[in-house]
Image 1 (cartoon, rainbow over the protein chains, first blue to last red):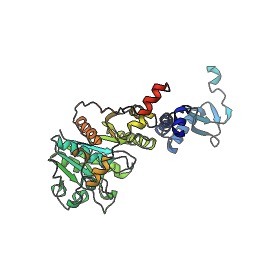
Image 2: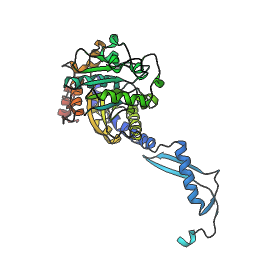
Image 3: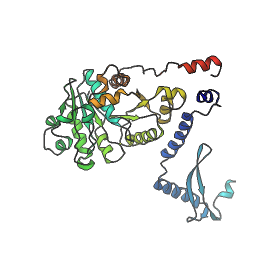
Image 4: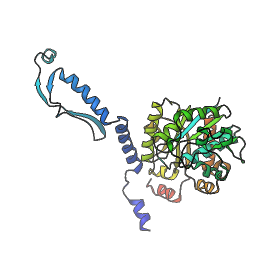
Length: 94
Length: 264
């Protein structure tokens, strides 16, 4: 009897399918980005090649990864710059 | 025109073999000539689900290796006209056939049959690739569960990498009452996430267990809801437009009471 009352009067919870749907959405974004080590290495290599045209970077310390937070996925790259190259075009473009 | 259709899922236990047995039987009941190929080498089960386990003489690997003619290995189903099974080998492993052998086998079957249904093993490795090697189109099976849907997504991507772009989704074992309560992913959720067209929805049905115990596909049974859904799916495979079964649940006493009391 109490069970029926608690069910009728319980505050409405988020339906579990909404949680499942959201978790599924996130995991598919991750899966589809196919964040394999090769994929990340290749992406990292191309990004560093571009950035190296403008600045001297610390390749060993460079970290590229996908991060998931607050319902979205971001590409996070931490690329320590040792020195901006002179005449790299950065100043001209500003 | 004859077609080879691979039935696959990624995840195991979502109903590939049951679906092949029922879709194959349903297509044959609709007057088509159907060959069901069990590509799950080493773990053969389609023969059991079909109730044909005692009639196997040769198997798929025997054919591939040239020990027997394709005709000799085909087991004819005596209940439905035009329905045949090519069993998997039980004592070999997935490397016993190559994708090329599977493809030529499917092509040879297509000369005699309207539909060749290939039951793929679970997983995304060699066994799956073999099963899909000769396919013109694919039916991807999932249940409304996170892990099954996720695996289906992987399989869809792999099918596309094998240049099989004609793929449709079959959602199996849906429980309308749980969907209504918001405790199960619904059809629209799954379709939207996977961005794929639907070919069938099969409700959870205890009759499947009963009919499988007896070794007869549920489509032969007029009282099975799943059987009805499989018959509809078979007609869609043939290109007919068939409305999807309504999954509405009659309102229960408690719901009506709650509504009357203003809780809903």
